[in-house]
Length: 289
Image (cartoon, rainbow, N blue to C red):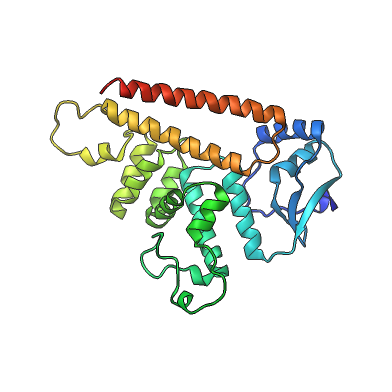
């Protein structure tokens, strides 16, 4: 159904739309029309489709095609979180925070999935009543989230670990960084004692260090080569950044249904270039044996 854009409400805490993406999307909509309606609840509050809505505003549309979902506030917030994680270029700490919130919401809807043992463990998603219930079992939070976002269950578990173990002070410091350390370094940071996390995070912010290992070596007797990261460390750090970007690309593709045939072909060519670059890297490593 079509709803006046002036009647559509946006939650105050929602992240703002990316102007560049809105501009590109408006050009596509002007050419081929709105292929996927936005989603709102019964009160016309936006659930999914912020960039499409802003693109319609840019085109001076008075109305926009909407799918109205009669879902409760918990399900609405779940859908909004999924939309933000998939569509936005978020930092690792932002994703971790959103997934921690998603976990609380999901387990409120499906209390039978709450783990009995240590949190985040894949095999621990059933409650004691699962053994006697004849009703279909809901997927575990990790499985459901991985499927919705198009990532591995391991990726979801690592984000939950960061949300649970990074101290609020360290997280606030990391938020100030234009480019956060790769997730592998954040995992190491989260394993530090709470009082050391903020100090280490501050050194990342000031560019004094590029790895947690460098932070841990401070105060140790100097030996040859400790001042400069090894080539292997640099290789692993760069490859971790690339892998994180690959996961983000995979999530974007999993959520994108509005590619034109021409855009799909262009994306396929780009993907082939990435594969060829990976093949060259593998060949270089094979040549070292």
